[in-house]
Image (cartoon, rainbow, N blue to C red; front, side, top):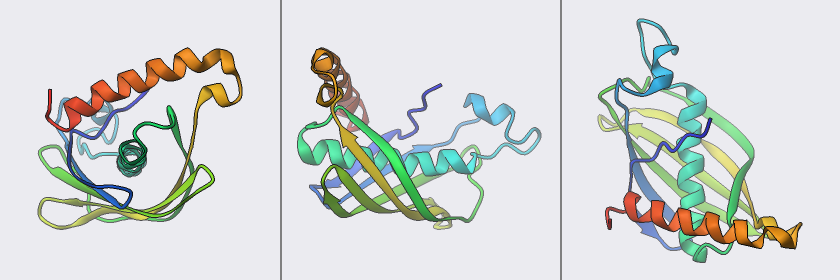
Length: 158
């Protein structure tokens, strides 16, 4: 299963920071099991919103130089207030370092009331599939094309 959790990219400062938001609705499938009778966004998915935001910052800052961005490491992850249906999480990521295909970020999610939901540091790895197998260059192109379409939706330009 693949999650696309960010609903809107609000602001981007090239190679520095990104601000986005996520509206949590009761219609999200995973809430039925987490927790029955007390639906809240799972902590791992709160972290995933930070990772998604960091990946978008990398893509937008490099004009999609790499088709794949994956989480390599998460450190000092702290959870605060619950994220319940009907709330909006504001997501803030800041690029700390970007060298040799590895990018380190500081990130934070907070509710519209100002309570921190998740914060921490994480490292993303970026690459193209064709780097290891040149026959996959067409897959890289298709992924980038799909990501560009998704960007238009997330930035409200479509």
